Length: 168
Image (tube, rainbow, N blue to C red; front, side, top):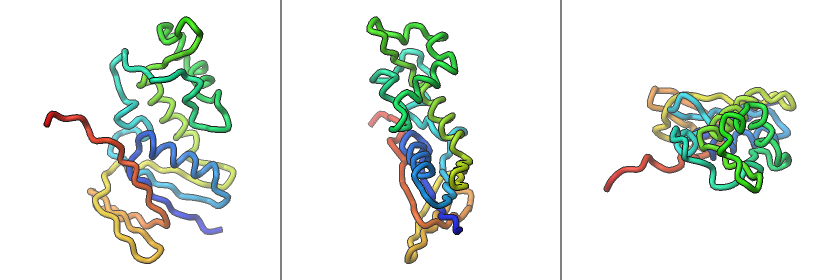
């Protein structure tokens, strides 16, 4: 069976989530490459926050990456001891508002757990680089990177998110 190649430019929340959902849903083998300059794909800018007061805007039970398993993130928090280390995360009503950095670790861990998807033989690879150019030629898409790599794929997803904040 032919492996379909997919390139995702941007390895934050949107890029990581797209990769996970693609390998889970595809009936054919995929080779997904995430082009992301950060050391870790998954957290991106939004969920790599180190400030202890930066928390998710909603309770943990609403943040699973797996729509069919709403408790996935909550179970990950329990297994990783997130709430034990951060008892302030639990509100009086029992809902947990986890730190953004912890959610970033969850994103990276979930992405890593899908890097080799046995159901179809699909893979997800993180290429630490920046995309410079995409060229479409018929059904083929070539993505070129700053380091001079050339990635040929059948699909390109641009998930670059927001730029770093700056003063105007």
